[in-house]
Length: 391
Image 1: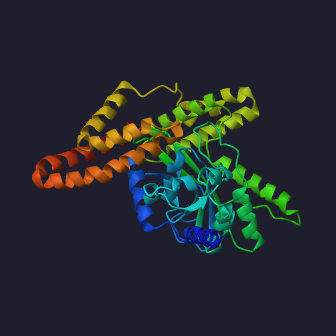
Image 2: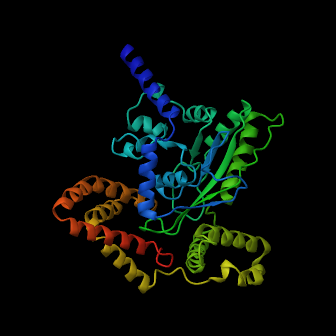
């Protein structure tokens, strides 16, 4: 009995320490390296009127994000909020290997207690851990959908974020809640576009003497509406595919970075919603003939020229063929399109841990070959990242 109590206290202490810590520099570095190597530069579209999201802030920030592409979504949020801590599923931090690049406040669901044979008394409430982190002035990232899915609209939002916000506001803490939308031109493609949209801080409804449950429901509704505004939220799959294809064409054709893929997508989505609200005739009006929506065309596969260029880019990375091969094999084991990238990163990361030491040793014996291979690999990586080549 005493051993069980001591074990529970130890586990609670460990959870408390995890909640107290912010994202360590080692995790931030590995996450930044992984997302940069796979996607390239992550563009952050800031719709707020405030300073850069990476600047120092004086009040805690609750970051609610869309969930599109598995555990890799946290990497993208860190591009906009590099010091954020996350509520993460306990299954992602039980393995020593996963803990190398995943950290956060563990979320234990009832099925996890049974699956991992945990003592329910030792499981800390994620809401309590999250509020404790925010009380100390940190940034807390939450995915209200709880699980990711590559679909045309968000999954139902859970109430945890609203409960955290209401608890802190009741305590008089000046909390900022920021919606974040994540966009991928192709979720399962190496060097595809990945962008982050940082929305305006959400105006939280006043309680005005209402019962806590009623007020919490209003706050949850406000958070959900704000997140819908900056996220993929199409009426059906066909509309999503059409907007996705148009936005990609706009991003390819627009000089410089004046119109990003995410901005084009949101503009098209907004125009579609407006046209649907105004009636079918609105789709034939001037708004349909001008602007991003004019970049019409079928959501077809990449042109033969782009396909050839992508294969050339991959061939130029011949020095890292074992890493690419391991990533491809791991990706093939994914259970859905929204987890392919994460599996590839796991496989590629494991291969890097073995292959890079081999290359370092080989460089002492064949420096010219390794040097040529490195230059070639950089050239291939840059080729795959060209605006007109990225899918």
